[in-house]
Image 1 (cartoon, helix red, strand yellow):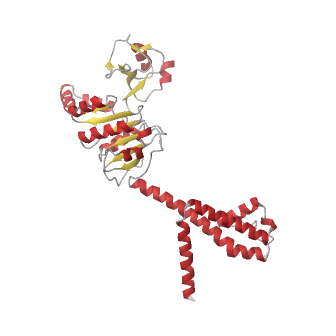
Image 2: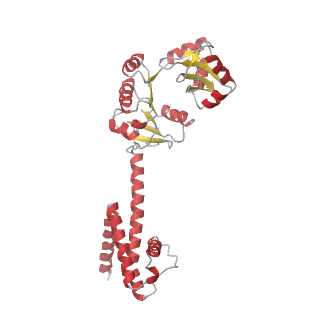
Image 3: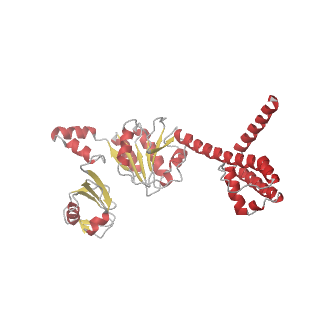
Amino acid sequence: MLLPRMKLALIFDRAFQAMADTHWRMLGGLILLHAVSSWLLLALAGETELHSPVTFIYWYATTAYTVGYGDLSPQDVAGRLITAIWIFPGAIAAFTTVVAKVLGAIGDIWRLRRAGKGDYSKMTDTIIMIGYHPTRTSKMISELCAELNTAQTLVLVTRHVVNDLDSRVRYVHSESLTSADALARAGAATASRILVYADSDADTLTATLAASAAAPKTAHVVCFFDDADSARLLAQHCPQVEIVLSSGPEMLARSARDPGSSQVISALTSQLDVSATLFSLTWQGAARSFGDLAQRLLHHRATLLAHQPQGVEAPHFNPPPETGVEPGDRLFYVSAVRLAQASLAGS
């Protein structure tokens, strides 16, 4: 008696395994075939209460989901036998297989993303961070998330294996920071901003070149260099890239001459500082003078610092009040919060 039971259990186990490995189209076809055959068998058994297609679909679904409301059921012996022998096993098996495949697919996606193999190429307006530093990257993430558009997503591309990943970031692992596949999976083709902070200036140079080639022309690419020569080399090939150069020695000398200046600059560059920080905007309103816009910003408890005309590489600090500001020019100001341009144009 025990042997036949073991064989029956083995048959069911292999049947469930085969269904779990079945392609979605094949599985859908099998479910449809079982449902249609069940409807035909019940029709032949004279179950008129379940003959209506809508009623049958409702009853079949509640049977498959194991809900069993009891409001509908076969009335004759033949219908009940068909239900017990054919419909119950098939419908419940189909439902559990679908649930298992869905959960398995979700688990596969989760595992791939945890391993850095996820694909975020379908996302738009992403912010991509290339390179990883245990402490500095975390601070950069906090700075970005302090004022991150809810529609945007942070994606980190790195060669490092990150086990304790920040939940605010998507993770793409690659053996090379210049990998076209890794940049494509990170969504470089539709990214709005790309930040490059690699382990060395050589890595930053090559990664920035690769990212600039993969990103759209409208993307803002920013990178960090310790060495001025490496920064100059990149500027010759990618003049549109914004380069942040280390100012450690200069800041040290400045703080020696003017105590506290390093603290002021540090506060201005941090979005996490609640008192004030540095913002910029591209002026889209009517042409105005720098002095007029400075007065408008003062009404919002903000200070206008610099003006960068369109097409000019460096901003001009404290230009004459009569300096014209045209649409497309960039303005830099200090404020506790980012200001809406509409409020400046209408104030």
